[in-house]
Length: 262
Image (cartoon, rainbow, N blue to C red; front, side, top):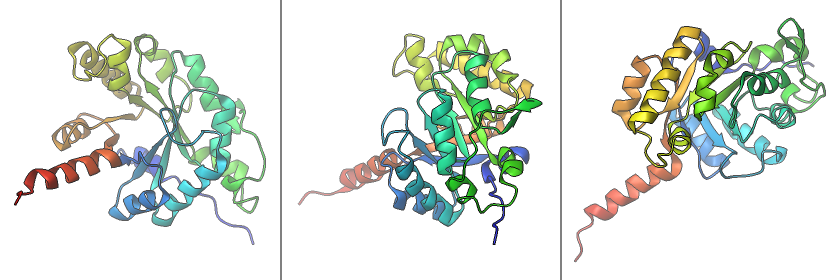
């Protein structure tokens, strides 16, 4: 008996003009992915650019995806570069929401987005057709007709070249969102470790204004809940609240600070 198509709740959130909140799961642990879903987070960010398993490791991705599926949270996977083969591999493993790093031009973005779709911009896409986990091994009704509507592909804007090309990037058909990356913008502008430097904040604001003008969902990092609330009010639709290691550090350090030595 055939099964029903998948539903991407992150995409529904964007369409409803709502805000999705999530956490970077920096230990790559399926149990923690499941736990974050139980806590009510909209997405769990898995970063395959800076650490973790290989982005080509479909089995590890499947383990993390199953953990997300248990509680209905969305796994948001960051890939290290706009490699069409890498995009297809992640999607076939069952990823529905991903974003790619190291883009500079609209052509970079178009290659990644087109690789994720069966039909693209009134023509054929470049998604491979098979019967992987994404189609529940061939049992999903109308897989080719519904999959394009359930995939979100975004990009990180993290260098001045990408900012300079932002209007063309935002015009790429079916771009799911742009993520303003202040930490990498700080590096690329000569201010590593200073995401609140004036030069960086000016670029982030330029990204925000352009994304809102183009009606493309905007994602970013939250530096404390006051910052999260401010960004949610200023048009951000995807916000990362922190990380597993950051949360543990804060709690354990507070315990140690409050310990009274005997």
